[in-house]
Structure formats: structure tokens, C-alpha cells
Image (tube, rainbow, N blue to C red; front, top):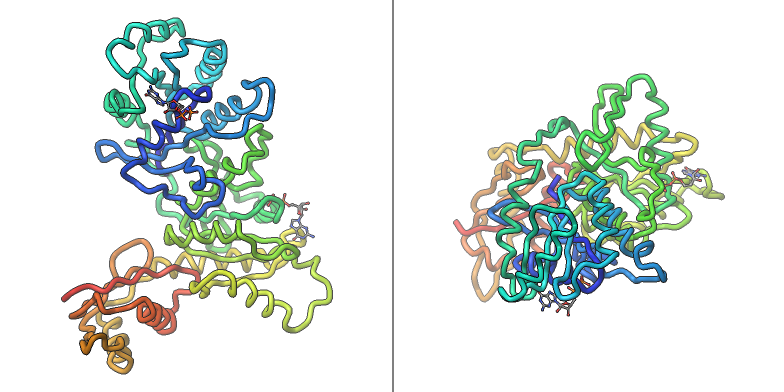
Length: 436
Ligand code: GDP
Ligand code: GDP
């Protein structure tokens, strides 16, 4: 899991300006996630080759008189819960305020690495006034100008040098990692608890094995896997839980860490845009996907085709990657929950599957011969050879004479053929056409 840097401070000190500067060279990674990208509050950056994720905790509505109780305490809590490191930003033009003291006190108690950073130091003239901030009782601060970028280098040097994960070894490295994602109240915790209850004796709860996420090892009938950030395990009522942003961010990070994403929906609600966002993220990160339609017990008047119709409705909405298992369960009644686990594990295996080059060519080349890419401007594309890359999820390269003439429709055709011939249910496939 990547290092997470939170930028915390009063409004107007320059948090977003620094955030945007850090992201400048990289697109926001979650541009399809509602509420996040719109405001670009979450994105990836890197320094000296070390990647990290930045959250700009600011930018929320301030809907309370007492600014500290409202927006800022949420920010601070978020930073404390989630971040590896905190950039605590101050404004030299306004000097040190009571709110600054309050924020700093909270951060200090949280035992996180805090980088006190004084912004709007636009010229050396501002260095002297900045010394006022030693009153916080600190030995070191950073001065910078977010607007021009000066001073950011020194801050980032120290920041990435101090990242703990450089030596961090994931104790679950080789185990399948599954996350159960979905909107609130769809039944994620119920499923988690049902799985755990069933296994009371053999489950090991491992809390806080990394700085900031909870993973549960699950072991039964030869299935061993890690449930990532399982909802049922974290009942810490936090102010920040009402932040959509907060939950989106957790979901993003859990998905990044997982191999398979279980997207759970409530049968009575159907597939909505937020589910689409989760799905988009999983797909973009090339994770396996299983869709669980929960609370099936509440669906009345079930007919022979009810499931089929329901599944078709979902697949209508999700675009072209529809080769995905859809299961109908009742977490409450523990109906088909082990089946759900089995299917998720099957998707995990499929995602790792490697097709031998000889087999791949033997099967795919005749298909291409029979149905070649349509000629373009009188030119014919000849696909000569293909390989699967040694990547964690299936990616294939097709070598041909004129890759630029292979259009999207033909890539889809190729993907569908791969699925049909080799079976990649639940797993996004990446296809490249290259010059040979
Ligand atoms: P946030 O509310 O903490 O996210 O603050 P913003 O990033 O929105 O910045 C607030 C204001 O301060 C904007 O008008 C910025 O242009 C300005 N600002 C940000 N960084 C600097 C800086 O380094 N120097 C100066 N002079 N102004 C800055
Ligand atoms: P989460 O927010 O996604 O973790 O959802 P919860 O697991 O807390 O469940 C929300 C509500 O839905 C609770 O009242 C559960 O008892 C209920 N619920 C969960 N699964 C089922 C189910 O399969 N059938 C029915 N009828 N209710 C369920």
C-alpha cells in the first residue's frame, strides 16, 4: 500500500495550491470517482522515484460556527487515521493563530510524522517573520511558497526519506487479498461477520499489522485469503465517517491492495452510479471482480427468470467488460456465502493464469487468419505472433505489421476470443498490438 501524505491546516493557508503542484505531473488517479475527482482531492505524486499518495483534506463546506469542531477536526482525524505523514501547513502572512495551536496539539498526540510547513514564504524577506512559528515548541520547520514551488524540494526530500514502508514487508504478500466494497448498508459487515462467525475457531484477527488498515486472515476448506479493510471489523464511530470522501478514499486504497474486489449491492436498490465508480476503479487497477446481489431473501415473487433478468440489467449498465460472475446471496441468512467465497477464489486463480506461448499462438493465430482486422486504406494487418506478459493480471501483446490500423472494435473481438478460448471470467484483460 502506498504511502499517504495528508495536507492539513486552516482554510486559505495554501493546501490546495501545494496539492495541485504535487500532482502537476500526474493525473489524478481517481478521475472517475465522484466527489473526489471533481475536486481533485486525492492523487498520486512521486519524488526521487518514490511514489506516494497525497490527500488534500481541505475544501469541504464549513457548516459550523466553530471552525475547529467542524471541518478542521475532520481533516485532522482523517490525517491521523489514514496518513503515513502529515504536512501541517501554516501561513506566514497571517502568523500563528489559536486554531493552529489546536490543530498542532491534536497532531502531536497522534504519534504521526508531522512536517510543520510555513507557506507563502515567497521571498527571503518572509523568512524572519516565519521564526514566530518556533513558538509551537518545534525544532524544525520548512518554509515554502506553494505558489512558486520554492522550498518544496527540501520538504519532499525529508518526507520520502522518512517513509516507513521502504523496509515494510507485507506479511500477507503471497496470500489472495479480497475486499468487499459497496455502498453503506448493503450488507458488507453482515457478510464479513457471517464468514468470520462461521470460522470462529480458526480465524486470526490481525488488527493494525500495517499502520493504517485492518486485514483479517480467513482460512477454511483449503481457502486461505485476506479480507482487506473489512467493514465489520471497524466499528470506530468517527466524525469522519460521514465524509463521503473518507469512505471513497478507503475504498480506493483497499482496492489498490486487493487482488479481487467483491462489489456488493442491495437487491432492492440495484446497480447505481457509485457501484459503477467502484467497478471502474477495480477495472482500471486490473483487479478481479465479483458482483454480489445481497438481501435476495427480501425479493418477493421470484420467478424462474428473476435472477437472469436482474443480472442482465446490471450488465447492461456496466459497459463492455461483462464477463463477470454475479451471485445472489443473503448475508443475513448465510445463503450462498461460501459459494461467494469460492467464486472469488476462482477469480483470483484466473487472474494469475498464464497461457503458454505455444498454446496461445496455436489457438489465436488461426482465429486471426479466419477473421483478420478489416483492411484500412488498402492495407492489410497481419498478426504474426502473440505472448502473455508476466504481469500480475492478464496482459497480451499481439505482434503485427501495422498496429496503428487495429481499431478498438478488433481489440474487443480479440479480447472476447481470449475469454472464450481460455476463460478469464471476472478478470480485466489488457491487450496491446505492437509492431513486429
Ligand atoms: P487552502 O484553502 O488551504 O487549500 O488554500 P489555497 O491553496 O486555496 O490558497 C489560498 C490562497 O492563498 C489562494 O489565493 C492562493 O493563490 C494563495 N496562495 C497559496 N500559496 C501561496 C504562496 O505560496 N504564496 C502566496 N503569496 N499566496 C499563496
Ligand atoms: P454495510 O454498511 O454494508 O456493512 O451493511 P450492514 O452489514 O451493516 O447491513 C445493513 C443492514 O442490512 C443491517 O440491518 C443488516 O441486518 C441488513 N442486511 C444485511 N444483509 C442482509 C440480507 O442478506 N438480508 C436482509 N434482509 N437484510 C440484510
